[in-house]
Length: 383
Length: 167
Image (cartoon, rainbow over all chains, first blue to last red; front, side, top):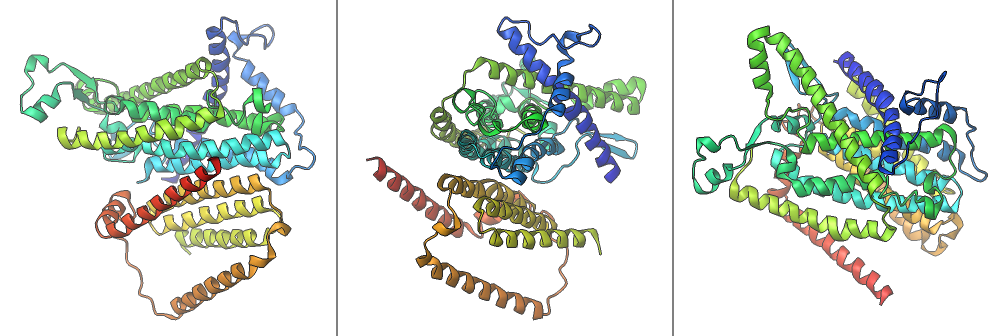
């Protein structure tokens, strides 16, 4: 068991943190360039080979590693040195409960593509994520700089406020899927949802067979559309990237909480934001877009269909790869969505960020809980 | 020693050490608050060892992740130093501390001297959100409602106090 967990952890750190996160910095530059009608990063080259600017992440890391690590005069040295780590670790360990695939049976061995599956599932991510606040807050406080302090004051207020909304906006999802575990949520979405099923449940009218093809994938976004929008807004504000980057606010606070950081310690703050983008993409994909589930093709169908020709073992293995690919596709789509939002919307003013949280998202998320409960009472359980 | 025992002593030692660190960090309120966070997180570790998973999650989310952040917010906003606390009120704090330490010490002595039965395995579903939710809204529903009433009163009070300043 520990060996299995270790292998999965190393895989996640190598593939997601080590490979995907640097590529995202390139994606962000190139996408912003495309959106703003520029060429974008293309100058870093090795012997004239630029690979469309893909060498820029490597050049960045080299530059950041070789820069001097400055601790400002009058700063709290210890806190200044550890706060980038406090910011980075919660972002990385969030992957532990995100399922990269389902549970597969090869004979007597069972393979599950998730590192840990605790009973409190999603609450683990919320709990760990709430600790990330300290990295930001301490970074600003320990820098002995008024701009930084202002940034970290904003960060602490903003992140606590949005934690409340983030938790409340997914209560509807918990109610629909009856679980806090992300693997169970993905499994519940591995089926289809009959569009006219409510007729049968409400009025007892059977759906005619020729309309039975009117089906949607049973994705969370079709049960909880408002929940999806609110959760995305809240968790993006939690990550404090634009349009919610008031703690950084370079036009007001220069660079906010990480103003006094240089070299790789600045890089760690930067990196943890990008890793969090991937965590958010994984969460949103799992809760609202079916996770590893392939739309209209349930696990049973794939294994039965291919298994009848090539044997069950091969079919299960192929199914695992297909599910992994499906999850990665959704992950990339969600990363792209966040990047587009980041380069489309201008920064909110600080009071607008707070108003959005307490005056719009909080009442809406409470209303969403009541409406969900009411509909589930009238129409019945979707599962 | 089994692994849970080793983990228990590790978390317990960390909790006690960081609690002492909080008390002894008189000059630096931010460092004291951070020690409090470590105490909270190690207590959450002990809760996990006791199979109370939901309580552990809430311990980290609410205490370590939200309440101490608010402490930090206030500390950074006021930027207090140790000599700025008014000396007149300190007898009250010291008296309350003495009372709490005496009471919990007496409880500890009684527990240590009592002949406690060997604990059995927890019932299935123990510590999960389902069981906790059911017991909160059946057996303890009156207490839950009373607590929510107190919170409501606090919210209304805070709004009135804040509004008076604006008006």
